[in-house]
Amino acid sequence: MTRTNGRKQGEKGDDNGEDLRESVTGWKMLLAHHRSEELHHCYKIGVGSSKHHICARCLGLYPAIVFTMVLVFSGVLRFSPARSFSFMAWGMGTGILEWSIVRLGFWRGRNYLRTITGAIMGVGMGIGFPIYFRRPFSVDFWTVFGALGSTALLVELVARFFFAEEEK
Image (cartoon, rainbow, N blue to C red; front, side, top):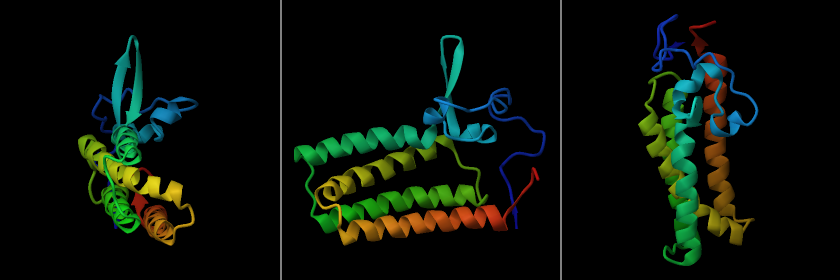
């Protein structure tokens, strides 16, 4: 199987390619933690004369985590521990599934979908984390965390070792 990145060799990216070659280092990694050839996974935002990249998935993830955790900690949303970890598993699983399909090269993906799945992941995490903070040794939490983490690790290993990249 050959992994495709949605572009032919030499073809420029969505933003005419000028930003795909720039280095993402230092504090910029907090906003866009992608290699320079993967900056198409980010939104490009111009502030004054400078341009910054913000990870599309994280743009949905972090606000959703904070908003949902505020609702849970304030008591507006209440879930049993088992139900909260179920929501966490489904939310995180949705994001990992979308990421896996893109990571394995079956689809290029779209930033708006990355943002949506990031928000779904954030809601799941925002529901699951408060229970974890109250019960850090919960078997349910560590089961969900271990299963999803193992899945992501397996996908990454398969992508790195069994799928050849066209650029190589």
